[in-house]
Image 1: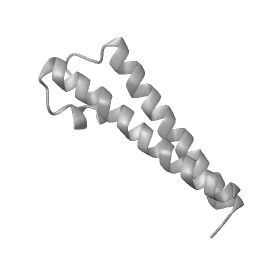
Image 2: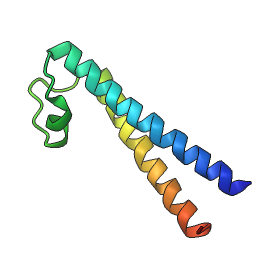
Image 3: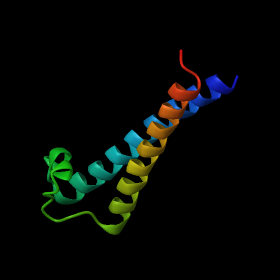
Image 4: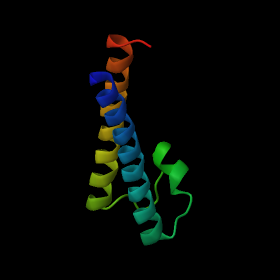
Length: 81
């Protein structure tokens, strides 16, 4: 039962993290009409930079993805298939 809870929660966290990161990028691209922001975020070359709300959403998404990764590692270490 605990294994299924971990598996479900990691899937939910990965999905939520990706959605948050994409939401921040979509908000940025709608505001600036810069549709190349997807790769510019990862090379740290944004033209105007994120607003505070976009930055908070982006960092929350990254933190959620990191937490989901830690949960995935714990699930694989403690309960190998």
